[in-house]
Structure formats: structure tokens, C-alpha cells
Image (cartoon, rainbow, N blue to C red; front, side):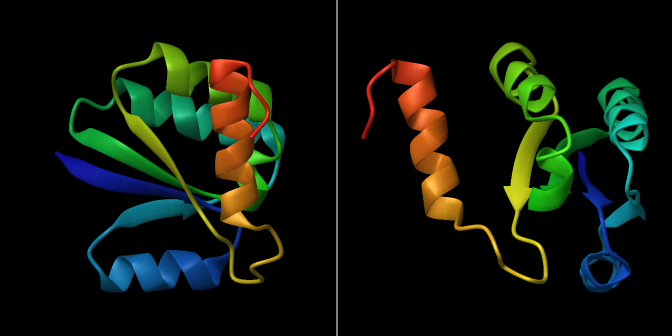
Amino acid sequence: MKFFLLSDNIDTQMGMRLAGIEGIVIHEREEVLEGLEKAMHDEDIAVVLMTTKLIQTCPEIISELKLRQRRPLIVEIPDRHGSVKIGEIMDAYVSEAIGVKL
């Protein structure tokens, strides 16, 4: 089982390649959906790493996949600018999942 990266910038892709993780650089919503579809049909991919910016292109689809699909695990990683606070995103996910604002 392996990791796969969907990134919005080359810097993140290069860093992950140094760690042995292959991936692609994409920018548009359609490309994100195609990349996810490809990763979901590859039996070797267990974890898909996605930058925050790409998750924001289609949050409703990503949330649905996280809740419904057993494989692959979709993990959000901060982008190089760090403009979004991961803690706030996690609070939002938990609040949405349990129906209570934290």
C-alpha cells in the first residue's frame, strides 16, 4: 500500500517525492475530481494526501468520500502558505459529523 499526493504546487510535490511519495500537480476542480477517481481505482493507493487549497475546490465531494469510502483514506495537508488553520477545519468536520458546534 502506498501514498499518493494531489497538490496545487510544485514545491509540495517535490518535498513529497523526496520522501518517496509520488503525486501530481493540479489546479482546477475537474482535475481534482479526475485525480481522486484515478486514486480510488488504484488498488495500491491506501492514502491520498491533498493540499488544503485543492480540498477547498470541492469540499462537499471530499467530505462525502471521507464518510462513505473505506479506501483510500483522504488526508488534508497544509499548503506552503499556511493560510488556513487546520485546527479550525478539524473543529468544523467534527461539528458537522456530530451535529454540535464545538
